[in-house]
Each structure stands twice: as structure tokens, then as C-alpha cells.
Image 1 (cartoon, rainbow, N blue to C red):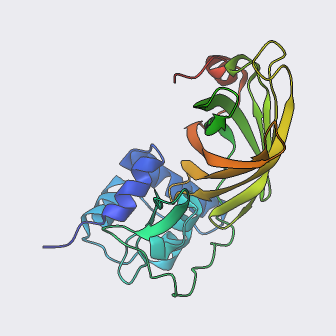
Image 2 (image 1 turned 180 degrees about the horizontal axis):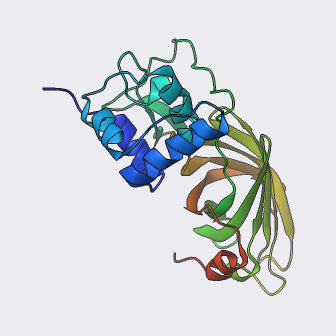
Length: 253
């Protein structure tokens, strides 16, 4: 009885693709690379059921392109299983071994696939937490942001209807780590009376590319350095006018 490839299935579902959609994306990736393949729904089923434990190179390269992950992370024979990001219980986040595990931290890192870099452009939900010393309470900041990617650089700008406090982020992607800066112009009529805050941010990217979780650092009203959790959660890959209009609203708390 073959062992199902749950890692590949999880990645496909994280991409919000049916098996037909996934097969079509693999075919399209092969065509773009001038390495045509005959991927179909039946082949995807064989991969996910474990009936086929090692795809041929032409399929492996296309799989890397579609998923943005090295073939070793897609659950095939001899592969390195996937990672999971979790709270370390001390205010930080760690990449830890899950049930499907990843190689120990001492193992050599897997190279990023050439020509298969993920595109993070689209609409994301930004959520961060901060402590207000003046109000002696913790608060959550929510924005829908539009992320645009240029090479390995990401620029994020909040949609105006999602918050009274415009937010911008400029990030650089290095493997599964995003590092950069953030700026927020608080609302003129709000508690902070239009004050401008800025700082640094570093996020770990989930293997599916649908969530980034990490920490912000910045100064407070008393010019002390504060920190707190921040996450970006993928919403939609489209940035057309209709999509932006749909997300130009206050996010649900």
C-alpha cells in the first residue's frame, strides 16, 4: 500500500488549485521553459496517492516552478519534508519540525529553485499587535495591503478604505525570509494625532507562500524601542480594479 504524498497535496491546496488546475499549471510551466510535458489530473492523483514516488526531471522542474519550492520539499522519495512556523513561547517565531518534519537545523539548506521564484504580488491582510502605554492596553492594527513584486523586492501599500492610518512596507525576499522597513502615518483625528511611526520588520514565509509571520521593531511615544508580532495573510493574486475595490474596506477584526 503506497504512502500518500500529503506534502504535495497540502502545497496544491495552499495554492487554491484543483488537481486539474495543478496539472494545467505544470503543463504551462513546461511550455514556458521549452520543456513540454503531459501532466494531467491522473498524474497528479498518482503523485498525491504515492503511486509515483519520484517524478521525471521534466516534471520535477515544472513542479518547482509552479510551487516555488525545491522538489525535495514536495514529499517525493528522498525529499526533505516541509517546515512549519510557530510561536516559540518567548515572543519569537521558530521553524520547527512538524509531523512531516524538516531536516534538522544543522543540515545543509536546500537551494532555491532557479527560474521558479514565487510571485507574492496581490492583496494581503496585514495584522500587527502593539501595546499602548498611554492606554495601558494592547491593540491590533489591520490593513488590506497591495503587494507588488519586482525581482526579490516587495513593496506593500495599504488600500485607503481599509484604515485611517496609511501603511507602507518595503521588503526584500531571501529564500524564506522577508526583511525590510515599515512606515505608518496615523490618523489625524485618531489617538496619535497624525504622528508618523516607522521601523524594521522581519518575517518568515510559510512553505506554501500564503502566510508570512514575524516581528516588527519601532520606537514609541517616549522614544523607547518596542516590538511585537506581525503577519501577512494572502487574500487574492489579482490586483485589477475590481479586486482592489472589493478589498477597499475595513478588515474584519
